[in-house]
Length: 571
Image 1 (tube, rainbow, N blue to C red):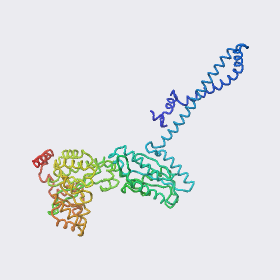
Image 2 (spheres, rainbow, N blue to C red):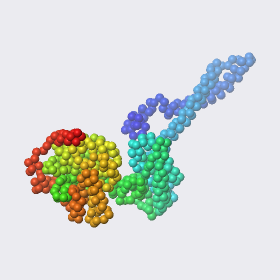
Image 3 (cartoon, helix red, strand yellow):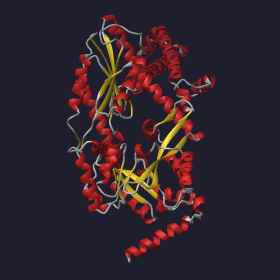
Image 4 (cartoon, rainbow, N blue to C red):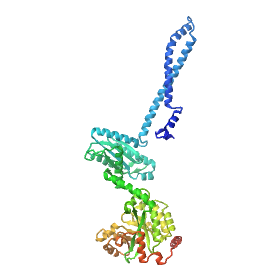
């Protein structure tokens, strides 16, 4: 109700006005009553002059003893006039105080409505008006206007690690450092959260002035923010848009809203390119953002329609050439985009928070597909870093295995090196929990991240996967190909089996054969296939459960066997 009365958006304006009118302390009504009182006081003064001219001399003469008593009616009228004058004057003084207080309150309300209470910057609403005002003045002088949007990189981590009090202090320091570098005509605003913007005029045809300012901003934040209890390193991403072309010509007429929208697109591009950098808006960014929006919409719709499918890549024993399993790869069969690679949709799904739901649906379908395969064939599945942040992921995965009646010993989970540094304790707990139930754990893309020998020794991995970037070097012997030999030697020393990714020709395969017994996967053995193609391949090879005459073991029994093996190993 209060918002309806005060923000001007009520759909019952007459009722709001009526409620306001009935308030006993309404300043407008008090002012009206006080003006009436002031009029009464003025009339009383006039009457006082008229009656006092005769009553006062008569009263004085009567008091001196040589005159008649004054007229009692006139005397009473005189006293009444004095009382009315005192009353009117007091009410008038109250009126002036009330008007002054109201003006101060209105001024304060205007300040609160246009500024951010934490940093003292303009807020989003006020920034719009200031941008239009600067554009008008700049146009009169023949200048261009730049709108720069600034965002703190990974600000959520600062709040999570150091608390919101320190996060607010960082925002205040950020605002002070930006303000210290801006020219006098610039306007700085906090648009919300950790997002700031400033708008300023500059000579048309000289965008390097803005480039210089952006570089000085980055230099300013190269120095950590010193707080009383902690030192915090921060980086910025900046997007810039102007209402003139780089050569100084005027393009399509843009307003404040368009400038803000374009700067926001440039900021998004800066973050996508790795953060801690700045970009000017380019028309191609708008097309890219539209495509991104189409992807997000398509992913949400496709998830509900079952458009995401598991494809399977063969894993081969290098020494014998036998098929030993498959790695599940996600594919999106979109009616709008065709067959989409995971490199395109997985990062978007992670950003919009759908990767866990998508992965679990794919795993459920993969477990159902792999349940038809021969018992000797394994299924490898990549796990997103987002899923590894979920402390309940291991329990949900085991629940899916039971529901699909799929033996945990045939499942291999692949974890990339980058996941190990986000929450090593949680990852260790998940790995241990899954291995206790018989699930195998592989370290994926080995050599491309930051894993150390200490982590390989302490974390219970069952396999190492050599990244395809190293395997590709085996085509031509060189110093880089020695890395694969070193990884193979490391795996033998740690008694960890190895899988080589990206085996695409016979030269690579022959080089791997000389290194000992490995598993390999890659386009040399064929492209990833959908479930129907895999089923046909296995039927031809006689590797389906129905052909082998096998019965599916109960997953509960399999989990129990894993527990018994674990107790036997501990004893």
